[in-house]
Amino acid sequence: MLGFVEKQKKNTGSEQEEKKRRKKLVDEMLHSIFFWDKSTNPPLEEIIPDVKIHNALKNEYPRPFEFCTSQRPKRTPIFYVLDMTVEQEKPENEEKINKTEGSRPTSENKCSGVLHQESSQESNSCNKYYGVSISTTGAQAGRIVVAASCFSAWDDDVARAVMTYYPNKDKRTYFDATITLPKTVRCEAFSIRMERNEEMMPCRPCANLFGLRTSDETEWAYGNCAEAESVSNLLKNEAKENHKQKYNHLQMQI
Image 1: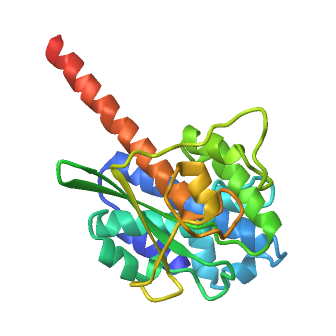
Image 2 (image 1 turned 60 degrees about the horizontal axis):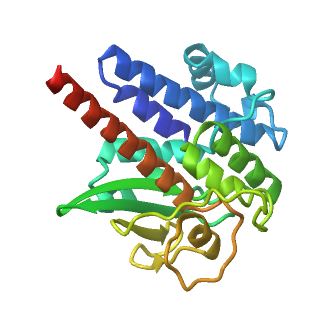
């Protein structure tokens, strides 16, 4: 994981805004790595045994070292690895993203990992948005990540949909914020611990949250699957595009 961080540092572009964005991404990922590793109580010296790397990272990214025991991360490390992989390979290169070693969970990840593609199709065009399932050890850790994602990472509509059921599998009686995605949206999910050609159907909770068609009655914890992250990315990017189009239209009128 840390080797991937170093690779991304070396490949960072020269533009100042891009550097800031990349640094923020690496900063959050290191925070997540340290937080979850520290939850099993090893000192940071054991997490990063190489003294030179430890000191270099601490000098470049001091916040993760300072707050890894007092502040919860927004997401698990695998989410940041996927973001970097998609950016490096480009969203349209689905096969490359699937094969990139950086997007695989390590052997220590006991929870199943899914690489998910969300496509919106319009006039034969296809925009792809990716996500992974929440890879944590233990139900309590998973609930922490889902709560943190709802609060600070996911699109508001996805967060509200998940909160319709979270933290239990029973639907709340006093509000329903679930989503029905349009027919122009197509979902593909694959286990990254299995062969890539073995596609997985959405589970029952994902069908309940987002109106996805499925015959699978498996019930994972709500918000645990890759669909939540990918739908969130879709909604965030589509909202940006709509805002950009409205802004351009307004400029033309002026």
